[in-house]
Image 1 (cartoon, rainbow, N blue to C red):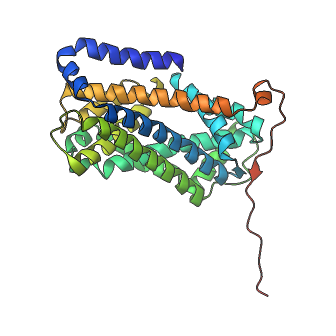
Image 2 (image 1 turned 135 degrees about the vertical axis):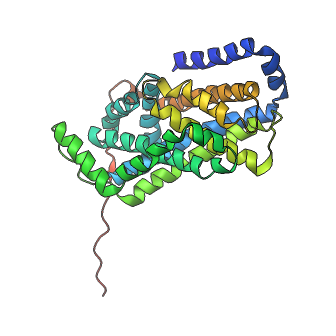
Image 3 (image 1 turned 90 degrees about the vertical axis):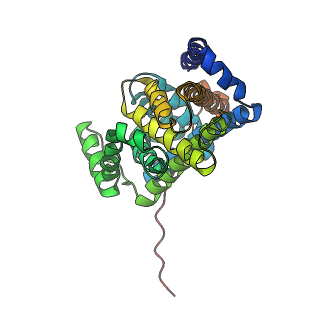
Length: 315
């Protein structure tokens, strides 16, 4: 995480030096309110992901308190800065038994959230960008092709069959509770809320940089642009956290409002804020862990399995 933060800071510094004539003026246009508010909203946006993971985990039969979910999810999220999207899943899978959650359930929840993010990001882009940045959709239309594919995979009967197949390959017992549509939709809702908040964080910076569009159009462009850029970056699995790809696509999608110099600065600042937010939430997760759990001496509480509603007969 520290290395990722240094990389993000270094990218920002390189942008400032190499394009100082155009970028320096853009930095001067940023207001203290815009920068601080954007950073705070980014931290809140990152926080939405744990609520999605918690909801999906409940769909699989394990109900965790929010405190425990934060501890597992965000400490494990540090792994996303290693090339390949599987590392945070493995980290969360290893942390979960300390809180009474079986590894297969934790891994399934993490994989489902990753899969959910693609149609959620694509949906956010598809309902906003056609109004303000159709050129971005033309250049990167293949990104949206993945949206219906992931949507089909996430249909509960299909998802249950795929998970059962994976566990058979791994010679592990199947999940006792197949995922339910209600909880999966709740997970998607929290992810969509996160994309909207990331868009607001982008908009708070964009409106300071003398954009050529304003008001609702700029907000739609910011929400759709960020969601589209995140989705494109995620699909390039070999690059840690989509570094570089996300920024390049965001600069393109913001072209109707911002020149390349200001858009590059904005993209790098948003990346830096997201990295800092990951660090903040990982620190919160570590701080919430009981001292005995950190030392490996705690017998953790069991996760609460979701219980079916009792049969009730009129009488």
